[in-house]
Image 1 (tube, rainbow, N blue to C red):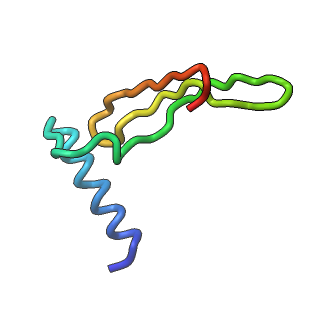
Image 2 (image 1 turned 120 degrees about the vertical axis):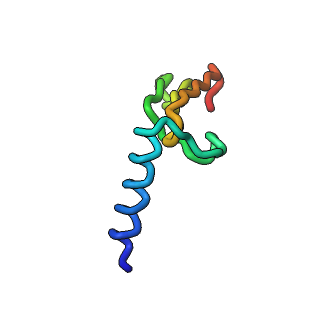
Length: 70
């Protein structure tokens, strides 16, 4: 079995779970994808001050903000 078959099987299983409404028990923090970042730019630095992430499994969104930088 090659890697592409394994990835396709996992994606197929995830699609089936989504269609049936079943979401496996998981830790959202370990399955996040970055949606957007907000930067604060001055002459010396480009600092990320806010970002939005979304869980790949359940779709829950998380927002972080710190004016001093993340």
